Length: 122
Image (cartoon, rainbow, N blue to C red; front, side):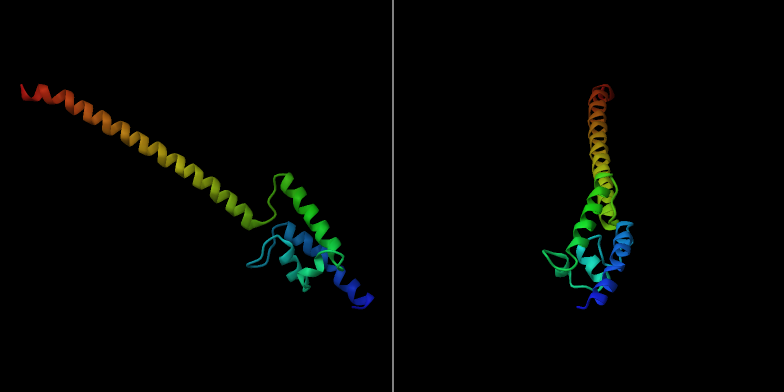
């Protein structure tokens, strides 16, 4: 790769970082190095070790982790999974409460019928 080609390839990476970190993943993509490499048109192995784009991977991961520590989820898929897990937990809690209420009402009905049965037979 010539110096001019490398410079031309390096310039778009920060913009791709920004897009992915804002949650603008391509269809089927995630906010990760694999998607970053695909968007840049570069083999993802170029982002590891001493290869030409390793510094982009390090910077991307640093920014990604900073967002996560700030409570943000740059990956819309991860955010959706987190939201759905929270909703699922709440629904399970509501279901357990509903089942408990049904059991309590069933027991109340049984006790009431037991108390009414002797007075109805007399």
